[in-house]
Structure formats: C-alpha cells, structure tokens
Length: 443
Image (cartoon, rainbow, N blue to C red; front, top):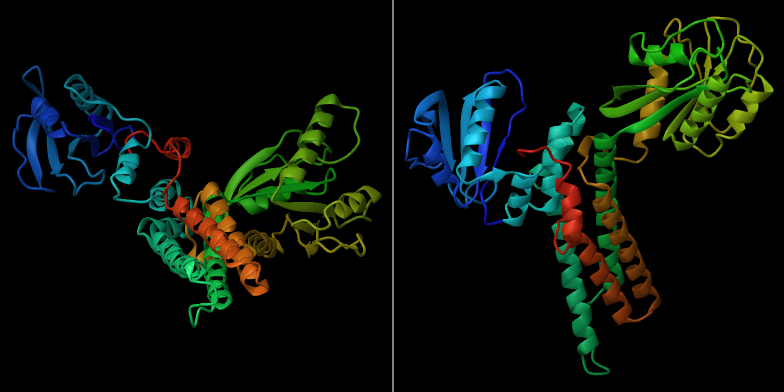
C-alpha cells in the first residue's frame, strides 16, 4: 500500500457538497498539482482555494489535510470539498488521477485504516453496518461496535484466557510432584464460559439487526394472504381479489418491526392445479416456506378447516411458525387447531389482531438475542465466537474430569486464536478481500 489512492466519498447526485478523498504518501503533492493553494500547514483545518484545470479555475473548493498518522487511514489524507453535483466532483477526481493517484478499490480506505492498526476487523464491520443500517436500533448497534465495545469485550476474554493458559503451561513444566497452589482451573474456565454466553446474544442481535429475518406468508387460496401482507405493510402492496390463484409469483416487501428489518414474502395459494403458471407459483411458495426464518400460515376462519390446511400446519411443527386464523370479523367456523405452533385470530380486513401478529413475529425473531445492546458482527466472526465458546466448554469438561492439563491448555489456545481472528489477527487475505469488497468505493 505504498501508492496513493483517490475516490469520491459522497453519493453521486445534486447536493450542497461532494467530497473527493486522496490518501497515501503523495496525497499532498497531488493536491498541490490541482489546487491553487500550495500549503496546508495545520492538521484538520479547512482552507478555501480553487480547483484548477490547465491553469483555469473550475470550482471554488474547501481543502483539509489530515497528517499521518492522525488520519482515518493512518496515511497523509487530503479531502477536497467541491460543490455538489456529478461534474465538479468527477472533474476533481479525474485531475487527481491524472497527477499520480489511482482509483481506490471498494473499501480500500477502511482497509488501510485496518492495516495501519487504527481499527480492528470488528470496528471495520461497524463502519459498514453504520452505512447499511435500516433502523435506529441497528444504527445504535453499529455505533457500539464502531467505538470498540465489541473489541474491548473480546480482548478482555482473550487476555483472561491467555493468563490461564500460561499458568496451566507453567504447571505442566513444573517438576513431577510439584504444583502451583490456588489454580482453580475449572472455576476460572466456568467464568470465561459465562462471559462468552453473555456476549454471544449481543452479537446474535447485531446479526439480526443487520441482516433481518425472512417472513413468508403462506396458505391456501383466498385465505387472505395478500390482504394480510397489505395490513402488515400498511399500504396496498399485493393485489386482492375474490378470484383464487391471483398471486402466482412471490411478492416481497421490507418493513421494520421493533427495530428488526423484516422481509415479508406473499406467496401463491397452496393447492393442486392444472395451470402451468400457477403450479410454478405453488412450487416457489413451498420452496420459500422451506427457506423461511418464520412462516405465517394463513387459514380462513370463516369456513371449516380443510384437510390440506391441517396437513400443511402439521408440516410446520417444530419450526418458528404462526398460524394466523384470518377473517375474525366473520363467525368462526374453523374449529380447534391442534398444533404446537402459536395460533392467532385476526382480521386483515379490519386490522384486528395485526399488532399481535407483529409482536409475535418480533418475539420469534429476537428469541434470546439482546437487541437493546446488540453488537454488529459478520457471519464468520459470529462463527468464530461460537467456536471459542465450544472450545471453552470442552476445556472446562477437560479440567473437571482430569483429562490432562495439556488437553485443557490446547483447547484454551484454540479459543484464544478464534477470539483474535474476530479482531482480524491472523486472518488471510481472502477473508479480508471478501470483507472490504462489501464497502462502497470511497469508504
């Protein structure tokens, strides 16, 4: 990373300002070649100057210099604030590229911040989560991660594991018959396990707030699936008619329930049909139900429950599913429903019971997640944390059963390395490439 990179760091389009960011060893010299002002002596101070092309002013701009290592990337950084709009910022970027900079890759500024040690991998994930947050709760979780709350929690557990592992390895090296006094290995591992068990629900909540849940609405034709979709969304999103089989493709809509992003999918009515197009819709509906995080099965409460309804409901046993008995504004003819799934009576037409359904979806989505204190992690980071907990539990069993101090120390070492990988220590370029490619250019 010895070259100098440049990119537009603001969204393209008309607005008050656009920002072109230049970072690297030649950032200042590039700026001097394209700006009328030649010196930027004070770190973090804005200077009014002109953007020049072939000696002519093309825009009046503000320029700020961040000196290494006190910048975002840890390198010399120049930010040029042009007037908003596509042309001024693009002209500025093209001038920077023509005088020695190259176009930054997606996420390359943040990757340089990681490489320079200004942030760790969990904080980098926090940066991305701030950008992509879809709810206030998600934004707060991202901010907690960005400011290092996850890093500090992980590092504290790591340090405690390292201390215990070191003491056990000293014990192993003691002459036969000699031991360290007061080394409560099993008790200390239990404390570490408890710390991990407190941290994981917060990280699971961060994943939930970042990625959301997929809720599929299914049921037989004319049960009111599309009406329920519209009621949950709060507007007419799906076509509603009395004609069976109106919905033949999957209709998706994104909503927020209690800060959790929810992707709602309205599906074709489940039934046998000779219509090729409708049959394909039924196939897609069944596939969506199988892939759903939560299934809302809609039954028509104004008539007797069909055998097909009972069969589909039996297939949802053991899953996160709600049986929504619709049309509660009409006499209840559905009768009792034998299922371990949650059963709610509601009316998509009048709105009765819709809030209860939202609450049930939220309850099923969050489960044991600590949503109010969530911390953002990637899928790979969450798996490393879960793996560290498994290692610690096995180490605790090893210590309790006397399986051997070398086995216990080895499991502690494995847990410790997993925790380091959460922070980006020892991870390969392939994982970093995947991580930072999710960023936009200019960040």
